[in-house]
Every structure is written in C-alpha cells, then in structure tokens.
Length: 429
Ligand code: PLP
Figure (tube, rainbow, N blue to C red):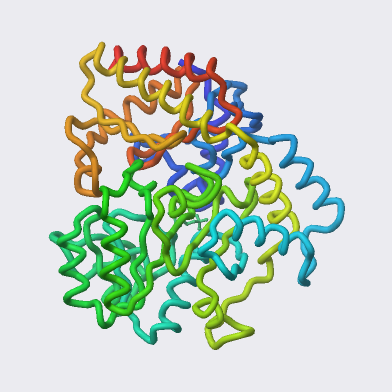
C-alpha cells in the first residue's frame, strides 16, 4: 500500500474548515467508498505528486482543462508575463480581442463572443439570452447532462421520456424546475414528443453535442441534425454546451467535427489554459440581446482578466500545432485497445467509449448510449478498480461518470505503463 498518511491528516484538517473537505463535491471519494481524497502538491506534464511524495500518471486533467499537460512551458510563460503586468484591469485589453478572434476563427458560429469566469456562467447566460431573444421560458435538456450548478440546469430526468423536471438539489424552487424538460439523449422520438408538447413555449434546447458527463457518449447519426431541425421549426434556439468538447477532439468545437451548427455556444475548461474562464457566443442578432447593446444583463468583475485570457491564447497556440489531434487519436486508440485486451484476458465485462483522447470505461456488458445505460454500469466494481489504479500510480476521477483525458504531455511510454497497470488491476478485481 502506498503511504498516504499526510493526505489523511490534511483531510482531517480540511474537514474542520472546508465544507466536506473539498471545494467541489466531485473531488470527494464519496462515490468510491469514502475516505480521504489524495492531496496533490505538484504537477508537471502528465504527472502528479501527492503530499506524501507518491507519483501518479494523471488522466483526470483537472476534469478536462489541462489538455496541454501540467505547467506547459508556453502556458506558464503566458501566465507569468500576465502576472508581472497586472492580473486584472477592469478595462478592455488587446489580448481579449486576439483571443475572441482565435475562437471565432475556430468556431465560426460564434459571431460575437463574451468572456466570463466559468462554464456554469456561460451556460446560464446562454439560457438568459435565448429567453430574451425568443421571449419564451422553457428549456429542454438531455438526461444526465451536466451544465453547471445554476438553478436552471440542476434538474434530473424524471422516469420516462419528456417528464417535467424535478430539482436535483435542495434549494431550487419547483417553479424553476417546472420550466425544464428532460429527455433521454439519442432518443429522437422522445425529443419529437417533447417538442410537440412544449415546443411553442421553449426558448432553447441545451445540448452537449458529444456527452462528457456520463462518460463519453457520441450522438447517433442524424440525432443532432434532427434536434436542430425540430427546434428551429418550433421557433426555439439550439444551445451547444461545449464546455468539455471544444478544442478537445479537433481545433474547434464538436460542432465543427460533426458539421452541425447551434445558435449559441458555451465554452469553458480548455480555453482557460488551466485558469478560470468561461465564454459564450453565437449569432450576432441573438448576442445583441446582451448589455450594453441589448436588454439582457450579464457582467463580471473578473471577466476577461488578462491572466486567464493569455493562458487561453497560449493553450490554443499549443493545440493549433500540426499533429496534436492525430496524436490524441493514436494514443487514445492504443490505450483503449490495451484496456479492452486486458478486460478480455481477465474476463472483466467492460464497455469502452472513446473519441480521440477522451474515453470512459464502464463496467457493463452492453452498449452505453444514454444516461440510463450509463447508470447501469457497476459502481462497486468501478470503486475497486479506481482504488487499485491509485495503488498503481494512475489517477482517474473518483466517479464512474467521468472521462479519462489524454493530454499532449502523455507519451507512448505512459500509455504502455497504464495498460500494464490496468491489466494487473483487472486481474485483481
Ligand atoms: N458544462 C459542462 C458540459 C461541464 O462539464 C461543466 C463542468 O464540468 C460545466 C458546464 C460547468 O463548468 P464550470 O465547472 O466551469 O462551472
């Protein structure tokens, strides 16, 4: 067993002053049997070192943003330069224009862009803008998709298609939840039924074009096209939540990879190069609803801060180099093939979903294509696998619903090591 005494001590101290010992619930080990989460002290490239000196290969990538690996020299230099010149001005700066142009060039549907501080804010504002533009209230979302922690989107699926939402958190008024309709992802009929029933009251349909919040789930052929067609026919807007997907599978959004365009897009994670950020944008006449041009209000003291913006520019510069996404595909396929082979060798039933360098391993013997199927994956086996992997020095998220992320810092050697570790874990399961 690895010594994690200091992590345990820190957890005790944290429990006394930080609510639940963590600053985001997904960091707790509650879903994998409890106990102290590992406290990390240092990170470089594809590796973490914890407070007890143990080293890990990192596939958590901070839940997605760290796509160029930890402390990438180009990103670090940008942050250092920004810090030396002042981190917050409260005025326009040249870098935010450069960055907005970079994003628009990569994701042309974002004709006008606004930066803010998190994915939560970006999605929340897209909904406000869609409501202002359409003068309607209701929002349709897909079951199991996470769109941040604002009241509007913390609504779970009811049973059966198109049920009215029930709040997924205490503190959310039923009246707000009533405005959210949840349908299963990849279910054209359920979506058509929802539009038939609520289309004329719907402001927008909120979509993760490739789902990253119950593992990795791709849309079935034609699904997103149908969502666009029916939504627009009902006079509502399509909002893509690309907080996880943008710049992950190609230099652009999943919308560019899949060839389907939304009216509004929310971004976060990767575009901050590891610093806090969010952004939203879309068709010009829709975005012109936002103050100071229009009546919909959105603001932020920290929005567009030079440190996040310059880190984001540097991160996209790294990702724009030739061969980056081809390498994600090559290493992703190598890791996936190795894990599948190990599972077969040891008779472990898994389903592995992957797009480029992002993948999910489900302990289940059937395809995972929506939230219901993802939920059926064995949580108890996942928890054991997670802990065995930690002992092997491999760090993934402590949840069966989170993806593994390969970064530009991962090497073939890391993948080979990981496959060998997974093989031993499967043998021990
Ligand atoms: N949208 C998606 C698809 C996400 O995965 C997340 C976070 O995981 C969010 C929105 C919220 O982003 P943030 O945590 O930056 O508020």
